[in-house]
Image (tube, rainbow, N blue to C red; front, side, top):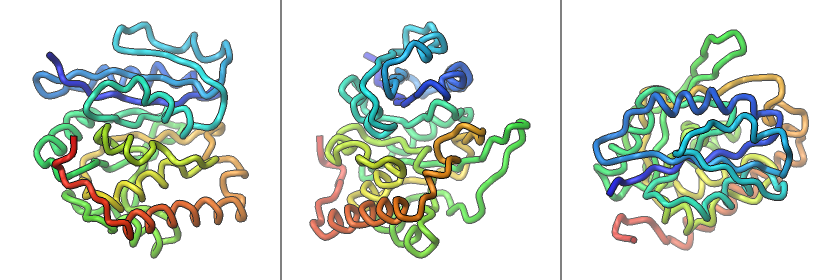
Length: 253
């Protein structure tokens, strides 16, 4: 019986046109022997605008639900995630070749690792790419390291939450993505790092598309009052988890 990586994607109407490109990047993945992937696409809402872009592929499932933001859409999709690992893929992004295999290989090699991330590049409208300064060295990311870096560097993590691959049982134990209007993936990353070691791959794992309609490019995303509230609650959750000292040891499940 094959083992499975479940890719979870939240989508709304404006980003639906990028789904075929995301699917193409999935089809280019080559997993280790005995592994397969299944793509869960969850629309944040119920419209007639997303379905036409959903690929015809037996490995792809599409569902809809009442709108609540990408974190809610991803979390409700977990009800159908039947694999050992859950990989994030935003509707407008692309996985780089080999990304899934590197995630699986790292997590299978060390049970004490709860999650894996990788290098990301911005994919610009003209097709060119731009890297991020300050990527860490490839290897383990120790507990608490992400929060410390994030706090000291203007709320910017040294690893990208859009590249996360997570053990399903750990993701469920933390309640999925945070109930925030934005930064829900950063909140999850901080919580994961509060309770478990992670992994960073220095090879490019994600092309993060920059385009005029993306949510993170809107003025509301950088509203000072809301941003401060998001950062405050994300930090408080991570610190509370650290104080409670429950941690992923690799013996769970």
